[in-house]
Amino acid sequence: MWTGFTPPLCPLHQSCKHNQPYSALRLSAVFLLLQGQVEFFICCCGLLRCLANVNFCCLKYSFDLILQASGVTVNDEVIKVFNDMKVRKSSTPEEIKKRKKAVLFCLSDDKKQIIVEEAKQILVGDIGDTVEDPYTAFVKLLPLNDCRYALYDATYETKESKKEDLVFIFWAPESAPLKSKMIYASSKDAIKKKFTGIKHEWQVNGLDDIKDRSTLGEKLGGNVVVSLEGKPL
Image (cartoon, rainbow, N blue to C red; front, side, top):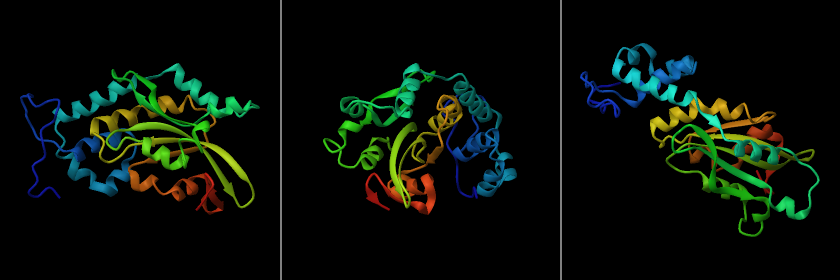
């Protein structure tokens, strides 16, 4: 598995006296174990073989990242956005236009808070005006090389009725930096706890997993969902 491969040096410990090499896979080993995903990790890489090569320098690096995320809090504006999207009360046409159809959340620059990302949202009033297809527009909001959390207010039809449901999405593309993936994954529970009553959660690891709307249709109701945002599946 490792034949002919020399992994890079730990980015935060290049001056460490051990100066030992590491790989993203070895750091991932520690992270997966701490997250309780033992069976998944064993299937993917072979637990004993990889852990035998984890060095103390990089083990500390992994723990530092996870502990860094453990104190993350959720900004009040995030909770307000969720409550506004969740409560479907009688509203005037103007109020309905201001409702958020989709919104992204990110970590603040100091990595201490989860905040509403500026200018990364779609309003109901945008649909049919500046936005032709809200689902496609939402996918385009997602950064290709970093993680995000998102809420998407899905409008879909089953064989029996038309429905609306909020979906909590954890966007963690393969191309995102390892440090970002680890911090966002470790902070996910902080925001999930604020989103009470969410029925649908979706972790997405790349555009191939999300660009086809039928994948979301399956999450919402399997083969009983016949259309999403007015587009047949």
